Length: 86
Image (cartoon, rainbow, N blue to C red):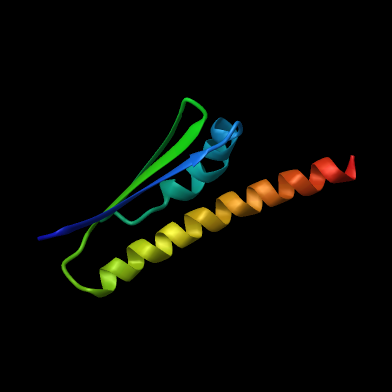
């Protein structure tokens, strides 16, 4: 059985805060999808792995990446909007 994987790295002073925001979402991932996110040296790093026995599972990995990136963007957009309103 083959595996699909992806790694994203986001350099940010807010890497620790971003990690805290996205961690609860990763807890409910399906068993065949492994998501490991951590921060190191002002970088958020997320490693995603999935067993890919069918072509459509590659799309699942892409959709998971998309969801993760949307969550990060929403957090950063909200943070910036709050800063501007102060």
